[in-house]
Length: 377
Image 1 (cartoon, one colour):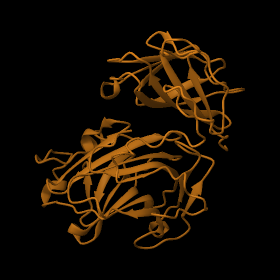
Image 2 (image 1 turned 30 degrees about the vertical axis):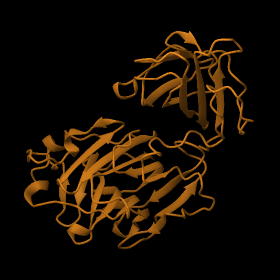
Image 3 (image 1 turned 120 degrees about the vertical axis):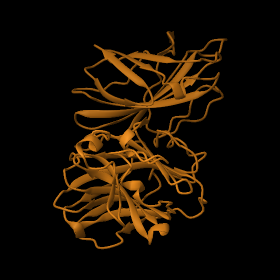
Image 4 (image 1 turned 45 degrees about the horizontal axis):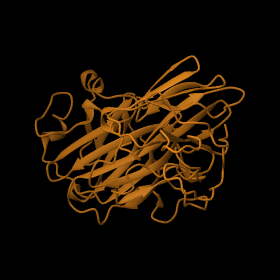
């Protein structure tokens, strides 16, 4: 299915002497039967310790998943509630979250947003262009590119691929594989995106010599803990066989790769030098990991602390207990991993597809960020 052009509606309170209670920028990317919405809420003059945004859909839209908020739907009524890490909303402050859903017929922008029970006013007409800036401080500017990826202000690398103008990723990105390539492809895609209008699509084929990646250097990030975040969407469930969608070159391990991907239908890390896995591929170990949902955007986060020899992983902001390396070996999780000393020094980041059997997949990557502190989804 082809994605339709994203639209943005900005919901603000009407003219009044008092400051508006809130404003909402609601940006949609949609295709034939589904859509994603990126929602930015800007608070008015009263600071909030927690927030709840409500609205009604005019059609038969149905929310199927969400990130950065707890979203519930009853009939046409939708409620989005803050999470512990983003519950505080100061006067004039903003918070963003997103959702994915399905629809048929029309997919009209909601017209009755309310923040903590107070109406945000009537919606402005949807726009696909950048309007003339106004003097109203609580009205966010509407753009065609959507909100920037979270964490850009603190991340050394933060790329939503909106500046890519060709068919093959360029700029900081190179395309290829360290060993051998085949019929797998890497291309800029303007039909599917997590934010804005572009992502990178990897058509991953089965077999060892079909590796396909886009990569960038991590030079300049120093020797402290490394934090990464990217959004990934794919079409085929993780297989039983070993596959990888991320690789990082480890100069402290002979230049071999630290890899993230899947095995036994769940997420795993793998060390190329000795084929150690995290978690152990026992039934008890695999049960401590999670699958990677298909047909929806997932937020994959990681921390690698080379000095401490530790690793942590989050999926959609939730820690994955089976994807943790700490200082205490745990049976079925990191006992095998810690059988030898491990202090990685990572020099590049590559996103794409490796399959060591016949397993193929199509993946999209967007909103990639790397820094020295946790970036979040």
